[in-house]
Image (cartoon, rainbow, N blue to C red; front, top):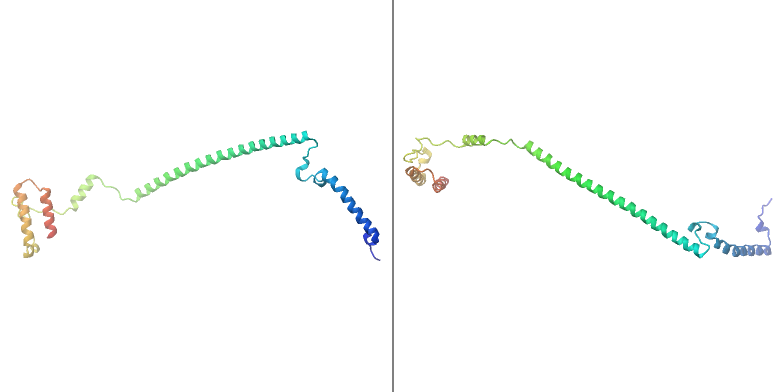
Length: 195
């Protein structure tokens, strides 16, 4: 048993009639569907068409007013977003400043904890006196004449010019009785350095 579809059973003449009928139907239906908008579907535009000129003008005015309202809404949202962003920026700056000063405070505290303790003025004087070399006794340096008793190592003949220079400087100091002047101190220091 063969199953035949109806176009295949038609004769050649019947096929031409059938195709002509479809073609005519397309020519008649398409213009009608185009007048309805969207080929009979309410796709693009959603059927917003006007039947009169006044209705078209009213639709245009309504669309313009709707667009203005939407613009106002969007501007309002943008202003809210701007204010929110500015508020967050202020909060971030405040947080940054607080963090900066907290870090400085922490750093200062850590340095103070690691630093050696400061000594008082009296302790500094006491420490300087304890570290200073001992003063010459009256047998090593005669305060009246300014004569210096040199150790055996410095009594060698190589040191004679330096000893005589130091002896004259200390003798001048002892004879003036005014104490050690700056120029005398510098001369003594220079001679000792040469020594």
